[in-house]
Every structure is written in C-alpha cells, then in structure tokens.
Amino acid sequence: MERSPRVTEKEVHLGTILCKHCHHVIGTQDTRKVTVYYSECSHEHCLDGRGRSLVADGSAVASAGSHTVFEA
Image (cartoon, rainbow, N blue to C red; front, side, top):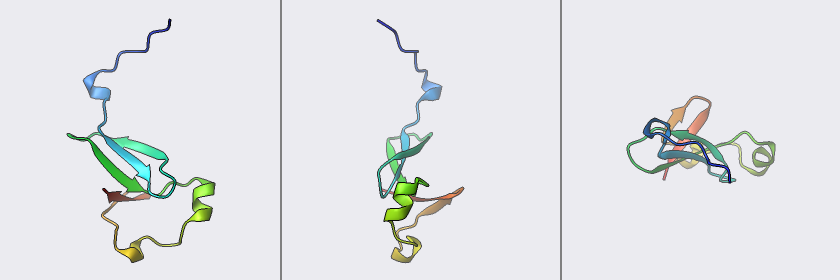
C-alpha cells in the first residue's frame, strides 16, 4: 500500500475558485476559512456554451488577474 505525502499547514488552501458555468476547479486561494469563489474558465467547451458578458448582470465582485471572481 502506497502512502500519500504528508500535507503541512502551509500547503492547505481553504478557498476554492470554480468556474461558474461548468464547475471546474480553476485554482485555490489561501484563506482563513472555507470560501468558494466563482470565475470563468478558459476551457473550449465552456467558452462555447456561455454568454458574452457577465458584468452586465451585475454579479461581478472583483477582478483577479485574467479571471473575474464571483463570491458565493
């Protein structure tokens, strides 16, 4: 039986960034509590199925690099 490597406290990120359309995990964020952020991924299947602008619906909270982040 293979043992998995030990995870130290420095490696644990409680914030998760999900695509708001396909729910793919885009990344993680070091936060003090469990938090889910929503953004848009760049997967081709997801780009084809979504609308052009999410800013028009007023749900944008912040910008993080090339992703617009939405908080649950």
